[in-house]
Image 1 (cartoon, rainbow, N blue to C red):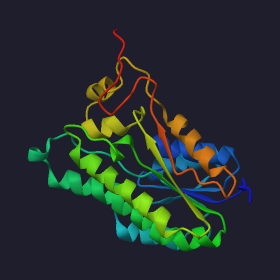
Image 2: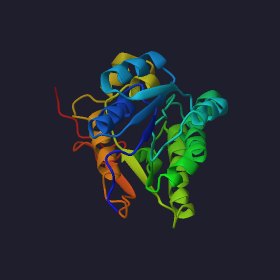
Image 3: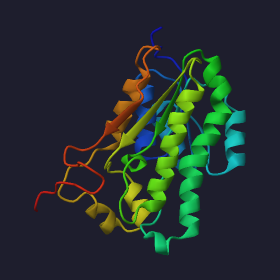
Length: 247
């Protein structure tokens, strides 16, 4: 069975960055798209640009997910992109609220969306769950324990899901980006200058690079499952080993 270009896609965390780029790319490829995120003003603007539909969604809030899912009548592709990192404290100085927020968004949010939309994904006859993880799902670094713990958990969720759905018409893919220049570092660090320094002296990926990966995996014939794509900038070898050119 070949993948149809007209499969309905749901994209979470769609108000900016990788999520917004994914909405644009999937719409350009002919997919009807339902975009969900907390920042509804951005969703409204994205919908006006792309023709996507949108609804408010906070994946860290179970009731928000239930309200969202209740209004979805068709879904063949689910892109779980909502996530984020908060804080850079070592474990001994960890802030409970930051860890809880990362787990609620990256792990529980992904779990809730899959659980809520699984019947529709299966009913489509050619479902596809795409979880946007991170190289932090299999690497660690000082100051990153909260985020890497959450992304390791999300990776375990993805791999387990693939086993649980074996024999059912649903593919499961994980996209694991390295350094991508979006609002990610600004949200995490809370300071524009510090956020910009993350990418200093090197060329990071951009959101469109990851959207391209997502568009490619969902376009494969229905019998082909791309388990995982790890996408890093050429200048990055690990989470902490980055080649930076002098100014």
